[in-house]
Length: 503
Image (cartoon, rainbow, N blue to C red; front, side):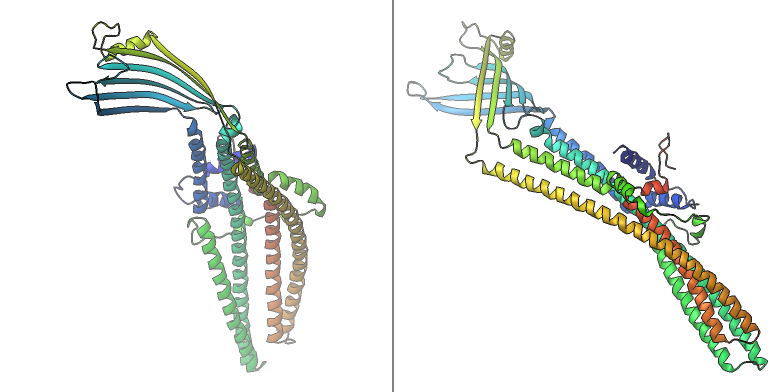
């Protein structure tokens, strides 16, 4: 995870506006450029910020909350014993202010200051108007269900797992993009080579037409020799046009991945100058498998998903317990009023707070509340669902491990056969070159004809294309194998220096 995080922060540093185009001098520089400019990767990066905010949202449930209450109530109460009015008007003003908070232990606590003014007849008090104020502390602590970290921090922990998955998903996307860029660049370079070969073949065909025309003028060959050479020339014009079309399409695809930064005259061939052919060791499978199990980001994502689902299962298991809550309350009361005049509590609204501060009155209480749904079927079903989800994830990881093993074996086979085809194509090119030179000498001596020479030329072109295709396939097989084992960034040397720069 530390290595992944370091690369993650390195990639974050890549996403800054490009002031001007700087032509890459190597494959690695082009990969860095692609990571900077690719829009899809930038969109994917923003998901990380959203995942950070999801953690904040879940943590906010433990933020303190301020509350206040302002209330007015008026009524008319009839009284049988009142000979004058038969009814009495009452008015009540009430206000409260306080704080409440939930803690990770499951306890909720609140502190509130209440005050009220009541005027009118009240059989419970002779004060009119009456002012009451109180300061009350309340605590509610679960003892069985909803107690502890599992019950109260599961959502936060799962959001943390999701953040790690999102970060790794971003890195995985960057790895996939890097591999796609190499594929696109090597295919573009291949077809630039092929276009060059097709152009050389066209030049040979033009020379052959001119050669046959001179020989025809000298009476050495029939008109059919010219016609055959012209047909070959037309065919090679067509092949060149097709090669140029494929090259241009590949250029546009690569340019799209680079955010349209690629210049029209871009030549990929210098990026692969002096490139060494990769090797392979068919006995390296056990080492590559261990490397892949440690470095594959999709496997790390799957493990995080399992940990998140296991945490959810623990939460649902805790919810099977009955509800048993301990409630505590403590408070101070104060009183004041205007009538009658001989009461010790005579005073205004502010005097009720003075009475409160002197602890003139108090209150406290304790309670235990127990409850459990009969049968508790909902909690049991949620737990069973979570158990199934965890088991499914175990199967997914096992299947992923099987895929990793298969992909490594396939990658080794692909690289092995690509190297073999590279060797064979090189020999094919060597022999085709010798045969073409010999046939050209035979034609110059009048011992051959156009049709045989064209056939040898075509074989030579096919041999060169086959060698280029084998070279490209060899490098792409090696790139794919490094991706399969999770070392694609090591291939492109994406590291951080002391200043946080990528090189």
